[in-house]
Amino acid sequence: MLRLSKKSEYALMAVQYIASCDGRVVSAKEIAEKYAISFEFVSKALQALMRRKFIASQQGAGGGYIMLRDPKTLSVAEILEAVEGKQRLVECCGEGGAGACSMHGRCTIRTPLAIIQRRLDAVLQSMTVAQMAFPDDNLEQYVVISQLTGSLEASFSN
Amino acid sequence: MLRLSKKSEYALMAVQYIASCDGRVVSAKEIAEKYAISFEFVSKALQALMRRKFIASQQGAGGGYIMLRDPKTLSVAEILEAVEGKQRLVECCGEGGAGACSMHGRCTIRTPLAIIQRRLDAVLQSMTVAQMAFPDDNLEQYVVISQLTGSLEASFSN
DNA sequence: TGGATTCAGGACTGAAAAAGTCGTATATTT
DNA sequence: AAATATACGACTTTTTCAGTCCTGAATCCA
Image 1: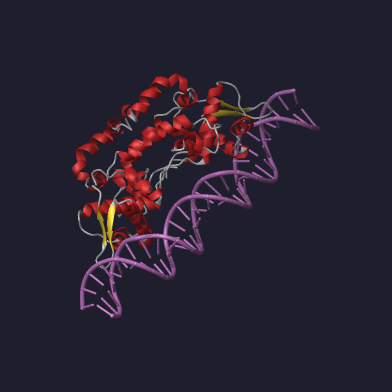
Image 2: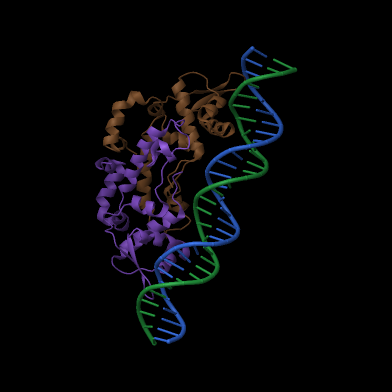
């Protein structure tokens, strides 16, 4: 249940790479070759990121993609949502609430799952593209986090 | 990517129900009828929980399942792992580390994902079966949590 | 003892989602 | 005009999910 799809995986790798190239135009071909993954498939992920205006595309020879959003404020949660759409643990802990649930009140795990859902969202929001692309900038933070797992989440409200 | 499988969903509902019945023997049939779900399918989930000794089974007429583990110390994480096996965001952030990765070092998102992985695990460990089965006992905690999302995770170390 | 009830678990099936491919159109550079 | 790139819908293949079916074994009760 909590495995990234290949598309999400490629999107994260691609956006990390583009961010790390800092201003340079990067083609889908270059990304596909660097990571030895399907060009057409990673292109789809890139197009999804483009539609959300996380990156900008330039067509034609010498074209490619550059960052549009500041990597420091672009979270893993946003990348995943761009590629997969809003994902929820179960039907009923999404927008529609209990109404969206096919079990109509028979289900009794909605409330606890909604709580877990919010915490999971907070985790995914807690990691930025900048942190993925420039780990050295965050070294001390990394160490702290690895010791006090999850401490960062505490500083997020909703 | 972060949607529960039906099997996990049923496992959570079933164990919540068994815990709430506190000592009474509950049959798979009863659970299937209460939630209007497939008897054979929920049975598979129950069998997985039995193998991990979270619940005990009794065969024969009048048989069924009872809690074996204390609901207060049994986490959602353990339930999910029993049913689905250890799930990781990507291959390489599991036990095998980079070695388990089919991309052999080409992948550059391993370290940040391993950090996210640990935080997600902490979230799933933060909710117990008791909290799901007896929400009233945790009412004040629930309220606090809903305001300070994720605060509970901070109190967990690894 | 024999039938009803209940769990145990492997084999199988249909449907859906994921992963990847293909083809065509459009934009840009040289 | 030719080469290079993105845009995107349609399509195919592979894998996973969800559910069913069946046989076997344990237990209870009449």
